[in-house]
Amino acid sequence: MEFVNPDGSSRKATAQEILTMAGVNPMPTPRKHSTPEDRLSMIHDPSHGWLVVPIADVEASGIEVSEFSYKDSSNYYLEEDRDAVRYLASCGYKFGAQHRDRIDIDHRHYKSIDFENGAVRCAQEVN
Image 1 (tube, rainbow, N blue to C red):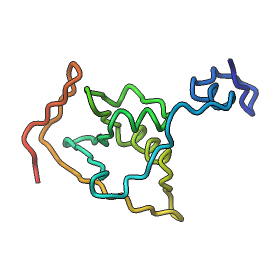
Image 2 (image 1 turned 90 degrees about the vertical axis):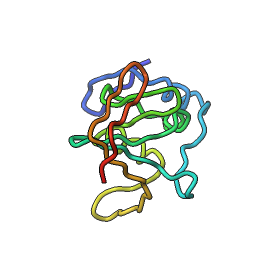
Image 3 (image 1 turned 45 degrees about the vertical axis):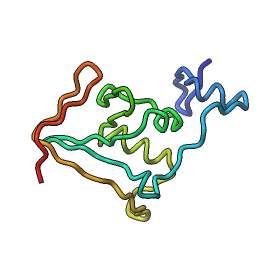
């Protein structure tokens, strides 16, 4: 199935869009992370950062995860500039000058972070 964009170009519909058009919502609504036990974490190395989100929450959000994010057996590590923002927006957080939602995120900084073969290795936490 294809969608026609306002500019006349077309693209393939995502599985979620097809199910939504059919009136089926197989995924739960994404939730805001508002309680201490729901607190999100972000890991950083000297050059970049990744939001740590349980796999089920990312799948419920319906976002397409880019090649700049990573996944292990229980979490997605969403790249901060693209996927993390899309995920948080899907949860209902608003950004921009007129919207300043407060998001309680635990930030951890490391000398280096390696994502290899479905495993995440963080070397020496830095304050």
